[in-house]
Length: 158
Image (tube, rainbow, N blue to C red):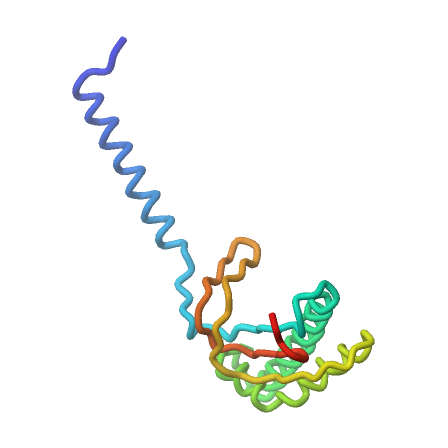
């Protein structure tokens, strides 16, 4: 019970359509973000030692929590002042918040470092920096130059 020529052509056409449709869906479902659509957050440890890497993660988590909480509060406060508007957190507001609070960000990182028994210096800055590839779940950020809030702990060797 073989397939006839007409059925083979129909099957081939069907497979071609499925292939084209699948390719189109995959292409259109990929993120269209560019390096200009967000501000990265990059913490550089004093060294590659296990202890310094663990401290880096504590600084990252603590500073990120503080920034997120304050940005949400700031966004909600500006929303309450504007009747009928929707609350939104845009890139420019985030950039301005970081610029206005860079010393607070450094102080927060220093406090976390001291609470963990270290006396490293901290330097926070907003600028373009080369960042290696990072994967967060299914989202991959390729290595490249990104606008980023960079926090360097101590010698910042990694």
